[in-house]
Length: 150
Image (tube, rainbow, N blue to C red; front, side, top):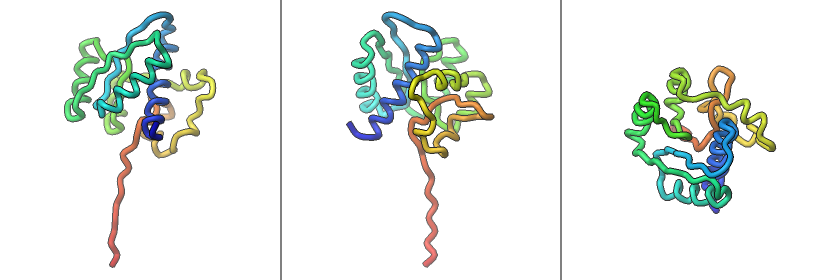
């Protein structure tokens, strides 16, 4: 399995496991998981997760990135937000302030072996706000600036 796919799988497992811990869920369960893709990789992650956790089924909701965040806002306002969803770093503060995301520091603290040291500090900026952690870095979109001094 490619490293980036493995990182995404681990992150997805932590997110979904955190949801289960938060809700004290036992037995068969279906969770809605929403992303903007890429769908082919997400489907592999879902298959791997469901293989590790056969009692949990994932209902995958994929929306193109150009419509994604608005759709999540509408679903949340309507009281039907997905159980687990991604938020692009550009929207994190807006979603946090609106109460659409809760801090997960308590879940991180009680998850055996979970350490934020596994993530690049700069990647944590997208998921932390006012000293609290609201998610786990899923990927990053570094910006490179080039200057040709010749």
